[in-house]
Image 1 (cartoon, rainbow, N blue to C red):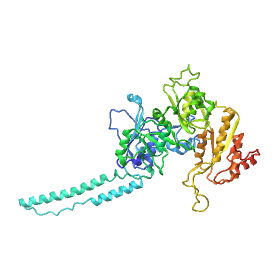
Image 2 (image 1 turned 135 degrees about the vertical axis):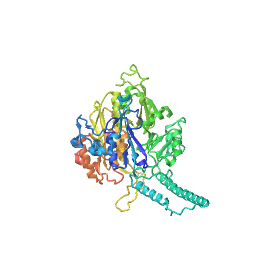
Image 3 (image 1 turned 180 degrees about the vertical axis):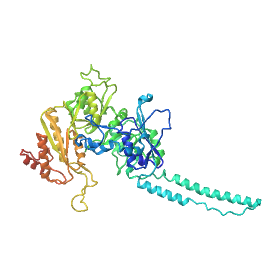
Image 4 (image 1 turned 60 degrees about the horizontal axis):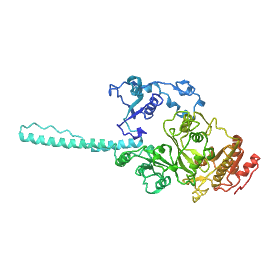
Length: 576
């Protein structure tokens, strides 16, 4: 990305605080090789002579998780790595020795801590010596043609016989001076045009790989941002000038916040500054239908927002409640303390809350349990308050690390990407709920241009309303009979990749785990029933709950067919 942003003749510095060659020399070597001479390493050994350094590595080995070292990708078994690692595996190893020497990898700098009592750093200075995109090459050719058109070649003058007359000498000198001045002016104009052409501040380069909508500041006095501020009661102490986002099709998915000096810099620079990333993400659009606010709080922005949120969204908990929140998969309210439940009752369902654990307030005397690792600062966790359960809105890898540090327990990831604690054992009853992604009920359906079906492109989709009732009923059963009575609620959807949005909605409602059977084919009820029967044979649920019908085809057949295939009893059209 930096190579595309850089103009020809410019330099970039690639630096890390890691001494791992996979992150350093491997990255530099493969990038230089990819651009085939358009990028070159700069020799800066004569600069900062007092800085002790070592040259870049020409060869290295790659260690796999089993502790074995490998010289090439061919010696690593295919089943020893994930699919993403296998795809990028060749880039972890050095290129051929001749190619490494040709690229001058030794011009990279390795700064070791023991050389001069510093940190460890890797530094590579790279210069862009040629255009790398079609647009850049076309522009360079146009700039050269423009410079050639402005250049006026000097025509040699015929020598005249010398005349020893003062007046003639003075006239000749004047003519020569005027001619030289005209030619010099033309040459200067050509040089100025050539120098100014590669970068035009008011006309930034339009790279295909850089076509991102720019950051736009959002007015807090109108639109969705006004609703967010009003819903969460953001205090006036928080500046309303720092909210910005990337606008796409008149809408935005995330809202960021920057300090006022950053806003001034962005506004002052205008199009001359291409902003790749900026600010702290504070709000993100949720996918829960019927939520009080269309946006939720984001983990990275909670520490900053916390001082500006009203008390009802800030819930202080004991260590017991913190442990129940971390070790349970979307724990039900009944698994939490009475005080915690009373605080949650003051917050509307389908809303974000901030759970805080302050180790200074909860000592070992006040709490029978204590964290596995000594905490020196307040722990702040954003959560989603469902109708019957509470879910943690923290990145999965960060949550695993948090569980390990706070509870001292390891986690085990299942094949579907969900994780469960090794000590998280519940009772035997398991419920499977089928959900389907359909065109939203509020959308006006139109026939496609081929007259073969309805138009689905660029149309809002959501969970089938009857399936949403099924998920809610499963949660009510667990709320009524307790977490010990129902081991797990699993949701399943068959469809394209975008069906994952429907599964995330079900997880946000309180489901424990999701299964996605990916297919781009149009499925008939019998096909869905056969897929469900296979999943039932694998997951061994005790109860299957389905919506009575889907609002797109209104078939009302899948449930009955599934019961026939499984030879299970069934109840249809259950209602209250």
